[in-house]
Amino acid sequence: MSTPTLPRSHRTPRTPAPAHPGDEHLARPSDARTTGPRPAASPARHRAGFWLVAAAFLATMAFSTVPAPLYPLYQAADGFSTFTVTVVFAAYAVGVALALVLAGHVSDWLGRRRVLLPALALELAAAALFLSGTGLATLLVARFVSGLGVGMLTATATAHLAELHAAHRPGDAGHRPQVVAVVANIGGLGAGALAAGALAQTGVAPLRLPYLVFVALLLLGVVGVLIAPETVSRPAARPAYRPQRPRRAGGDPAAQRLAYAAAFASFAVFGVFTSVAPGFVGGTLHHTSRLLAGLVVFVVFGAAAAVQAATTRVRPATRLRAGLATQAAGLVVLTAGMLAERLDVFLVGGLVTGAGAGLLFAAASGTIAAAAAPHQRGEALAGLFLVAYLGLSLPAMGLGLIARALPQSTAMAVLAGTLLALLAALAVAARRAGQTPR
Image (tube, rainbow, N blue to C red):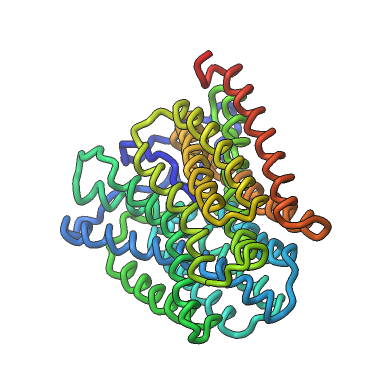
């Protein structure tokens, strides 16, 4: 759900010598690839391809949050509990994590479009499932399939954008690919919930119209990817496939443990808002507007995307310090709004918490990307994302479980207190690791 800082050079790194005799089989498949534009493609086509791939990226990420403002409608239709909604949401996180391990790296030698197109096809399959019914089994499978597509697409689209930009503007070390990827990724998550809420608010087939609209957008994304030029020249001999192994980056182990914990804490906020917050607004606060439910999710992701895009030149240590303080303050305001049943305070808390979460994950991904060797960066980031997606699902499920015995606002206060304790521990660990000034 976030985009790590990209290396400024897009040249293919040399394969390093194995650290120990016999380690040759551990070389990543991407070491055998050759990146760069194909000679037949013009700079103008790469420029157009950049924006077409960005649009497909945005549409896919937006589609993944379409169900968020609709969960209360599913609950009303089939009697789902809040805990069941979090289980449905967790199915998505499982799909993303599985795809990251199995297919997050194969575009390095298969080609970007050969992975983007199946990813979009999976999202279309998920849309067909959503349109086929509202039963629990259907929702679980649909969310899982959607997660698979997102897991395949995020890293691939991010790399494709960087390479298309480099082909269009050789030697330009600007931040456009990173900013566009952040907006498409995190911003798309917020835009999808807002659009789905607005479409459902019309009252015209609220559990069908949002998916039909996004089917059209995803089909346009397929056309855009087909038009965009390929940026990977496939090797003569395809490397042997193996799943991408989560790998610890080199450098300071304490700093990396801190990055993993920060990723977990930041995604916990995203998971709670995407799965539970719309139900709280509609149930406890008695605001049944689907547009408002989408706005609640949009506020969090919009703040995260904006702050990440605005701080691309800021050091990870500074982002970490700001993220810890901002997310902690946001959690306090958010909990106060829930306990007082004040929508305005709740929204302000979501805005501040989302900004803090965005800073926190940007710091985490920047730390891991900087510490990893170029040929191991994908595997190191895979490990970070796996921890992050545990944060996306486990706290949300915990909140849903607690809410079975306590009022939802009280359950959120318990979760917020737990997260505040985690953030305090991170601040202490960061100080000891030299990540923040004494």
